[in-house]
Structures are given as C-alpha cells and as structure tokens.
Amino acid sequence: GAGVSQSPSNKVTEKGKDVELRCDPISGHTALYWYRQSLGQGLEFLIYFQGNSAPDKSGLPSDRFSAERTGGSVSTLTIQRTQQEDSAVYLCASSLRTTNEKLFFGSGTQLSVL
Amino acid sequence: DQQVKQNSPSLSVQEGRISILNCDYTNSMFDYFLWYKKYPAEGPTFLISISSIKDKNEDGRFTVFLNKSAKHLSLHIVPSQPGDSAVYFCAARGYGGSQGNLIFGKGTKLSVKP
Image 1 (cartoon, chains in turn blue, brown):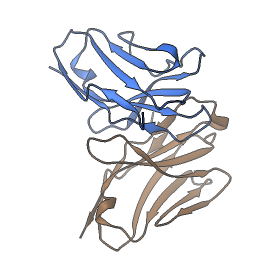
Image 2 (tube, one colour):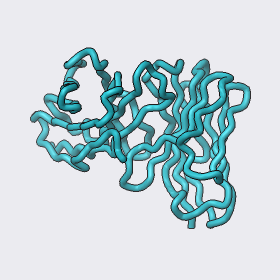
Image 3 (cartoon, each protein chain N blue to C red):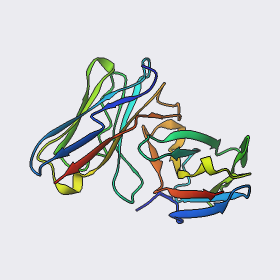
C-alpha cells in the first residue's frame, strides 16, 4: 500500500480482555516498529523487527505484551489481560532499512481499556 | 530517566513570526537527530534531521540547529503559518544506528495564530 496501515483505528475493551492490533507496513520496508503514546507522554518504544533477525523486545512493558511479524510483512501486537494503564495510542512504523532513520508511521490504534 | 527532553509542552506564536522549539538530550552517543510533526488523529511525519557532525540543516522554512557541547537542538520555523500548528517531537538515534529505535521526547504543541 501507499502508507503504513493500522487496524482497528479505535478499540474499546474491558479490563482483563485480550486485544490484537494489526499493522501493514509499506511494501519493501524491512524494519517495523511499534510505539505507544499515552496521554501527555512522548512516543514510547515497544518492539522492533528487522528482517529475519530476532526482534528487539526491550521496550515491552510486561509479559502481557507480545508481537509477531509474519512473512516479514504484517505485524500483530497482542496485549493479554488488558489493564487500564494500557490505554494509549499504539503506533506502528516502518522504514526501508535499519540504518534509515526516516520512519513512516501509521495513524495508530486508539486503545481504551474500561 | 528521559534521554530526550522537550521542556516546553506548548508554544503559541503569531502568524509570520518565528517559532523556536527546543530539545535537550543527555546521551552523548546519539549520532542523529530528527524532528517529527504530528497532527491530531494522524501518525507523526518526518520533518527534518541533522547529523551530529553538523551544526545546522535547513529545508525551506525549517532549520534545525545542533549544539553538541550543550547537548541541545532547536527547530526554527520562519515564517510560521497556521498550518504549522501541530505537536512537534524531537527524536534521537543511537550511534551507528545500532539501536533499532528512535528515542522521542514528549513533544511540544505549537499553535500558530492568524
């Protein structure tokens, strides 16, 4: 596609439920990133995929968070047993290669945990 | 511990005047700095960048200045236009691109008044 696509754009869930957020990166981009932005905060790094290498999971806040990237393209971020503090905008970005600092972001998924 | 700090959460400027957005960082190993611009309900978009070997980079109305000794960079927008109203994020990249992610500040909301 022309840009990074994320779905859903909005997700409201109840505390304790699991959610899955999807990201379709720009075709041909080998690097894919997940960030989140909580209210009043900056962009917080979560996880990064580069080609077939093991992902950098150093930003995941807890073991309730996981992500996978299938076939080097689409990525899914899963949050298990959601908590209210998980409420945030989850942003996906892709870039042509690791050392390319220009990230292209999707519009994000607004997650609200009630 | 924030490595990239944007100490002004908001800035209001009159149309036609200069907007100056500031950013401080703590890690001397950062080798590349970027500014991203974000409109509501959209993902951040790349605006301008600067390598640590330079002290100035200009692109049209946008100029980024880097003062390595002070670990400070700034974004100048002149003349400011109402369409520039957005949240501006400063970001930094680790040395040699070894970090698979950018570290972002909390953002400064710029309002340009007609």
